[in-house]
Length: 555
Ligand code: SRM
Ligand code: SF4
Image (tube, rainbow, N blue to C red; front, top):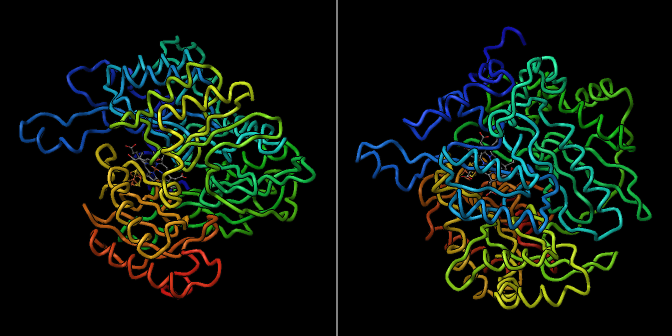
C-alpha cells in the first residue's frame, strides 16, 4: 500500500487533525459564502455538504457574483426515529435556517437544504438541544445505519432497532472536532491521546460505508445494495442472529466500464450481540486496510471484495474476528413496499404510514403536509419513523389517541392523499438532483411526479392501474434513489435525458439492466406504452413487470 499514489482526499483526511482542518477559520471568513477547498471535503464528515443553487448559477455568473453557496445538513438517525418533540424542533430549525422543506432520504433520515454559512452553527446547536447530531452522516466513514421501518410488527423489532443504534455508536469517529467547531466546546489539551481511534485511525475509510438491517419479510431497506447488510433471523419470535452480506453498492459512472452496481454477497450467519458487533467492526477494518485509496471510483467495499475474492475476504474476516461464521440461515422476503395506512402492532399500538412524494415534506397548494405534521407533533402522541422508501410512519399511537390523530390526518387530507396515490406512485423513489446536487445531470424529484402522471395514464389505458411497479429515478448514475434495483429505472444522462433500465424484481434481489440509452420524455413514453401493451397481452399469471421484461425484452 505504501507506494500507492493516494487521492487528494487521503491527504486532507490525514492532515486534518481529527477532522478539524481549518473549518473554524473557514467559518469566520465572511468574504465568501464558501469554505476553503480542503474544508469542503472535511465538512462532510460533520454531516454537511457545500452546495450552490444551480438554477441561479448562470444569472449569478453573468452578474459577476460568486455562486449562491449554501449548505445541506443530513442528520445521523440510526433506525430513523424522532419523537414528537424532536419533530417540532426540526420544523422550527427548517423554517428558520433552511428552505423550510424537510427532505426524507432513501437512508431513513432527513436533510435540510439552503443553510447559509452563518447559520450552520445555530442549526447544529439547535439540533444539539434536541439530542440530535449530524456526525458521520456523510464522509468516508460508516453512514446512517438503516433498519426495516415498521415498528413493533413483531416483539423483536425493538431489539433489532437497538442494533442500529449500537452499530452507529460503535462506528462513530472518536474525534471531538464536531463539538469544538460547532458547539464551541474547548479542545481538551491532550485530545490527541484521548482521541485515539482504533477503527478509523487518522486515515478513516477509503470511501463511504453503508450498513442496513433488514427484518424479513420486509426488505424495505434494499439490504443487498449496502456495503454491509444484516438480515435478522427470527425463530419462534426470538432474534437468533443475523445473516451477514457484504459488498453491495448501487453506483456507476457513465463511460467508466470499471464501475458497476453490485449486490452484497452473503458470507454467513452470526449470533450473539458481541460477535455480531465484532463481525461488523472487522468488516470495516478490512475495508480500511485493503480498500483502494488512490482511485475513489474503485474504493467502495464492492471493489475490495471483488479484488480479494469473496472467499479470501471471508477467511480474513474470520481471522480478525477469531471465530468462524456459520452457514447462512433461511429467510424469506415478501415485500419491500411500505405498509401504507393503519397497522396495529403486537403490543396494541397503532402506526399510520403516509405517502410523502419523494420524501419532500412541504406545504404545496391545498396539500399542507408541513402544517399537518406540525399539528400532529403538537399532540405529543406519536413518534416519527422514516422509511427508506422516503415515506413516514407515525408510530406508537395508543388506542385511546388514534381517533385524535386520525381526525388530524383526515382534516389535512393526508389519508385521502395516501389512499388516492396509485400503487406505482407510492412505490416510486426519486433522488434530489437539481437544483442543489452538484452531480446532477438531469432532474429527478422535481420531474418524476409529472412523468408519473403520464405513465399512470399509459397504465390506465392498458388496464394496469392496480399494478405496483417499482419506478425509480436518479439524476445521475450515482444511484441515490437506488434506480438499479427498480423494475423501471431512469438514470439521468443529460438534461431531459435518461437511460431506461429494466428487469429488476419487486424484492430488491436482482439488479436491472440497461434497455435503451439517452431517451427523452417522448421516447420514454413510447417505449413504456409498447412494453405495457406487451405486458398486458403476454404476461404469465401473477408475473411482475420486472420479471416480464427480463423474460421477454432483455433475454
Ligand atoms: Fe447519494 C452523493 C443525495 C442515498 C450513492 N448523494 C450524493 C450527494 C451528497 C451529492 C454530492 O456528493 O455532492 C447528494 C446530495 C443531493 C442533495 O442536494 O441533497 C446525494 N444520496 C442522496 C440522498 C439524499 C437521495 C435522496 O433523495 O434520498 C440520499 C441520502 C441518504 C442518506 O440519508 O444518507 C442518498 N446515495 C444514496 C444511495 C442509496 C442508499 O444508500 O441506499 C446511494 C447508492 C448506494 C451506494 O452508495 O452504493 C448513493 N451518493 C451516492 C454516490 C455514489 C457513491 C459511489 O459508490 O460511487 C454519490 C457520489 C459520491 O459519493 O461520490 C452520492
Ligand atoms: Fe445527485 Fe446523482 Fe445522487 Fe441524484 S443520484 S442525488 S443527481 S448524486
